[in-house]
Length: 229
Image (cartoon, rainbow, N blue to C red):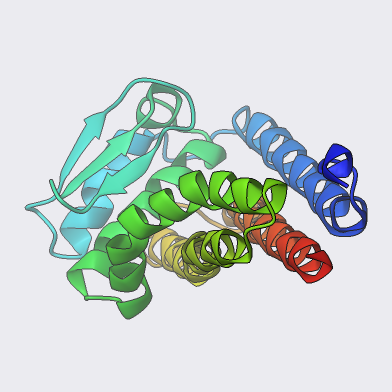
């Protein structure tokens, strides 16, 4: 039975389709980002400038905007109160760049307003990291040596990772909703420009949905294997 660890029915029925969905989501976000990175907003403000103005408009003058290394490494750091934007976002006036920059500002606004799902997600980061790293080794050892308690512990700690993905989705959707609202209300984007930024953010949201689907598929697989013990 152990020889079929990677070819069990749960892997074939649940995990493989979820992985295909995740691949599709990654492909879609890259395609959308590439397309709208070549279309520029009429106002010609770059991502760094728009992020700064949006933060000021929201009364968040204390939140910094800085450039960070890498590609698509954009994020809001709640500990330092810093919006970190990758070079392709910070210095570009493309619709993709402005959408991403505004999305990170959306997280800063969430933090300022004590948005509950964000608070919960941030508190779960250590547990989610532990769960994703420890779950499969624990479960596999229990599966290999027929130790049901270890398998149960592995499943239990994996629930931390699954919950993290589940709470991340509404956080990201809400940040994108805020991003589009402030871009429109501040007249940074108009009409089809706003629609372009929306498509980028919608594609990005799909990756979070895919991550949750993969985690759920893995959980179902573990439960099926546990039931065979």
